[in-house]
Image: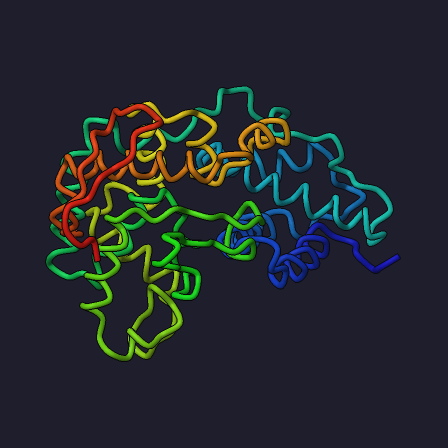
Length: 331
């Protein structure tokens, strides 16, 4: 048994474990470290483990946080604290977990509402125009948000894209299992529009970046940092929306153009469960490609073609058997 005596001992030990755990996302590790060091350790760090219970945690931590933080943030604080105690107990660092069975509902009886979406369907037209305008003004800076709207990818997995993950011959972008939240390889079909867009993007890259490993690189050839990418989105959006809002808008738009629910969820790399994923296995890639073609055709109707320049025609609401035809070179 270790010499852990206080809440701070347990939390600091847990942070030392998760901050070096590459199976957890970078954003999770950073956010938990910030929450624990900013809120938990200053308020409850000196509390003896034998004094920890719902009442003491409420008095020293949860109730004071309700005066300054939103309920969802406090929920994350408690989630981290519970995980720290559970890991310490599982690994024999403490004898008993004083927070076992504790949930946020013990401290908050209100309803946790989901964060409202920044966009509705009617915003898609002006958003496409904005992102296309940014791309045409500077393809190097405008590529990331446009690619993320086109594919619904998360910002972290987008930034980790390497040129070796993209095959223009096979028309596919492979996101390795190590680069995405689901921890499984995620293939994304590339449409003629995206092949052409990549061509314009590469033509605009300075020579050092063109030789870089990363699709989204910075001066010197290293990968664009998450902080730089978020700063880019703040500038493009005027701080009105985030990268994740593009992902949510794509998902709702796929429903609007008639894409099957399961196919849409797979495109966004959501986990469906074994039964649903077995059902989709046989012709999944064909259905994903068809869905992506229809989605990009919808974007073309709103001006996407002004960025990629490919001549591709396909009504957004055709049946699943429909296939696009192209006129002229796409890349």
